[in-house]
Length: 132
Image (cartoon, rainbow, N blue to C red; front, side, top):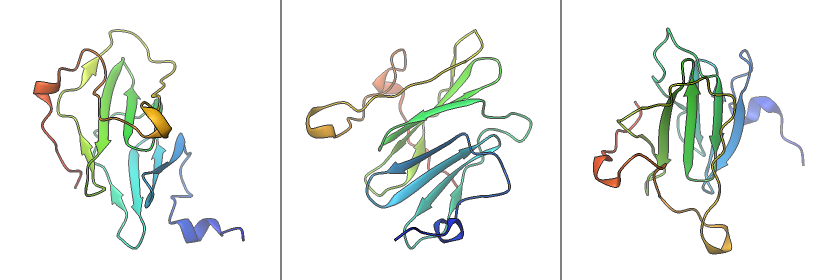
């Protein structure tokens, strides 16, 4: 049976850049000023990234990872932890050029995703930061 948009708790008064189901129990909505993480039977979590003076221009995601592109070529990476919280990777990658497209793939067998960080972001620098 089709669901009403209001039932999904998606933001309807801003343009949506991307919608993605995360894991099995949540929905991700990316719009120019925010990332909304909508967990089943939990409050909606809205990120504080990017700062209000910046907008998200591109994004890509899979069931466990999210990357957003900001004006000027900056990338911000997030991953879903074992508690279904979206963690922001503390180092932001500067591409040095305008971001026109992004893509994250599903890796592994049987469609599961791995927790590999994007190239050029060493594993040793990862420090989880839960979104407020």
